[in-house]
Amino acid sequence: MATPPVAGKTAGSPARSETSETIRFLLKLVLFVFVLRSFIFSPFSIPSESMLPRLLIGDYLFVSKWNYGYSRWSLPWGLPLIPGRLFARDPARGDVVVFRSMGPDDHDVIKRVIGLPGDRVQMRAGQLFLNGKAIPKQRVADFIVPISPNFPTEKCGTPFQDVDSAGRAICRYPQFRETLPDGKSYNVLDQENIPQADDTDVYHVPAGTVFLMGDNRDDSADSRFAPPEGMGYIPMERIEGKAIVNFWSTDGSASWLKPWTWVSAARLDRIGEGF
Image (cartoon, rainbow, N blue to C red; front, side, top):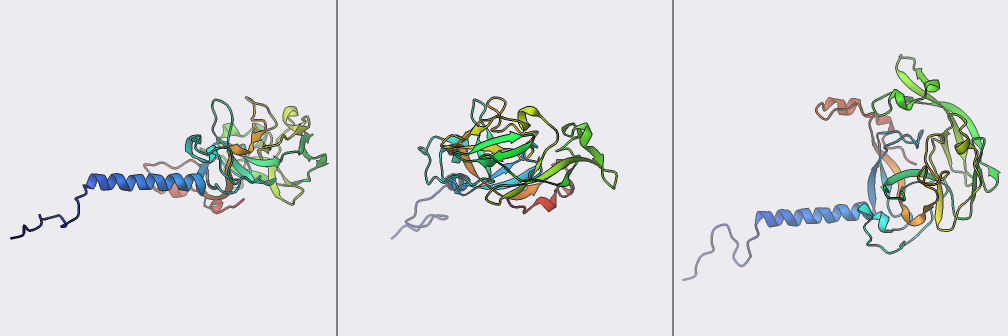
């Protein structure tokens, strides 16, 4: 007489413990997230005001990873698994890119591409010159950012502190519109005359690198300055991806223990803004 199957088991199939199934699922999830963040999209949060007015502290955005090819810096923690730069393509002037800075405290940074290999870049009296030609700089309406936990009064110089019609504290900056030779336009801030930032030598962008600047021209440690004050020219292989769209923004006033503040702190009008 045949022995009946043991209850709870399927005849002819090995038993799998709940623990092993959980481990398998977690490993698949980790692999999926690794591939997604390395080769397709990754999130990035804005920690400083160097890209005002386009990006505020507390903005969260998606970065596409395929636009410029892949290198070790495409991978989390810069894992040295990709030799050189695969499927390489140079960025365009005006692109907003995330890259890995150089030095012992290297970290992810976001700036705008201004100069490509072979370009000559210079600042004269606060105006950008590219290959000897002045980039049009048009005065537009002041940029206004409300004072909030993510942008306290200490970040707004006294000359720019103001109140709006409702009596709320704001920071009001002079704002300008720049237009690059290929037609790409974006707004920049120019708060005051800072000789080392506004009157520079001519920078000759070397092969294989880019010249990057923050849109907040008087508050950005960028390619105008050599390390450690700035970042100098950035090698192409250190570019991780291109900024695509804001998916969240908060003024920093939310509390994890008070869910209703998650909505009141959200800057919903910034969600969905592209580049």
